[in-house]
Image (tube, rainbow, N blue to C red; front, side):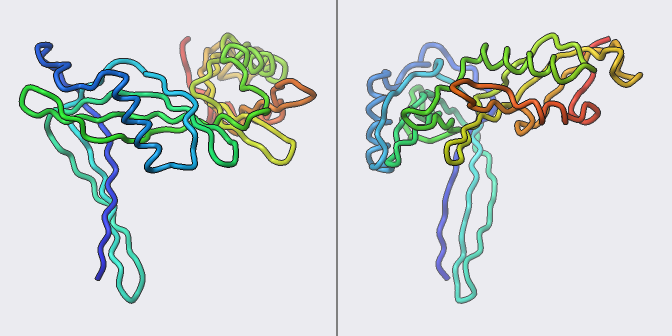
Length: 249
């Protein structure tokens, strides 16, 4: 029987670190950039790094959670078994945003972390890991609208298509997902809409404030005639009973 193991590491928890050694052993930012560049050259040689940006300060944790995927292969095929383990100790990470261009000219931004383990009164560099990715499209594609512009477009669309609500605010919760089919381009958003039920709402919702968080397929901007416009149809179809929760009196 052949066995293969793949390990994924991520963090949770909080560690209060003695300031006398909090920075001991941590790499200066230029060295972190070099580590990331080397990691990319080794693992993703067909991708070109466009920009590496530091995100926040060093984060410290007291618990490391390891997800271990193990495969067992025999004459009957391959079976994967996933197990989770928690490791107690001292851990730290420095987070960066890495923008890259792939061989097909598409672009993406990855959240990347330089990970450390606490050893005595110092930190020892462990590895570079990849986290969430945001697709950025291709050169020549229309730019993703600024957050404030997207919020304005959706607020106007909700105010127009949902007379059962008086919209107070629309908040973009995360970077949009980019979609493309042929010449058609669109952006799917995760939104939070704060609104009050009007006289056209159901009797139980009238005069009450709600926070609505519809699925991202209900919050779409389409590229149309050189501008981003909100797709009103899915907004009109949002089910307020299942997508909106009371937010106040």
